[in-house]
Length: 241
Ligand SMILES: *Cc1c(COP(=O)(O)O)cnc(C)c1O
Image (cartoon, rainbow, N blue to C red; front, side):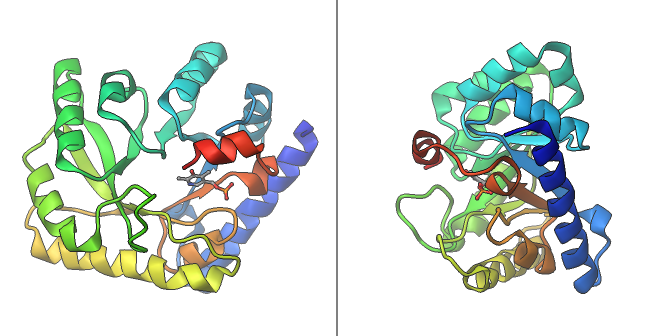
């Protein structure tokens, strides 16, 4: 896709985010746009960056690290998010390279991140992914296991939980996703009361088909890919899990 088209789409997505925020009585600046770039070439990412995007989301550690290497010094000006599933054997490669890891859903992974971040002398910010649709093929802790996972992660000081993330069941109508977004916010409030010491400020929810509903329901990060970069190749969609 040509740079001008990417810029036009970025502006349109930003405008839709701002309108949704205002409808909900929220400050548009309280919503961060993460442009999802799995399968997207560096050239298109640069076009998005020139249009004002500063945060990018990648699904796979390897693809992201390769892009960081190719982007060179430019990569340091961008904020990178890992939004896909993270395998324990990739933790050391990922820690410190991503500002936020959105997909922590078990204690073993949390401990591995904690150990790698501790060894690197940093604190890795993470989100806990919640599987609200109870879909076995998707990552995420079940809502019923969230409380104990958050309590356990408090003992991992180098993996700091900033909030919650969810990917609702695929649906053609954003109104079908809305109850899940609302539920994630509600769970966050409940957890903040139930687990002393936990602060859940961030809610990563909403994709191309439903980010306005997510913003209306309190998203602080929306992960938008195809609405900016166009439809993905099938291989990239499969890789998205
Ligand atoms: C691919 C992906 C997105 C973006 O999806 P679009 O529908 O293209 O906006 C968001 N979040 C995750 C976790 C993804 O894998």
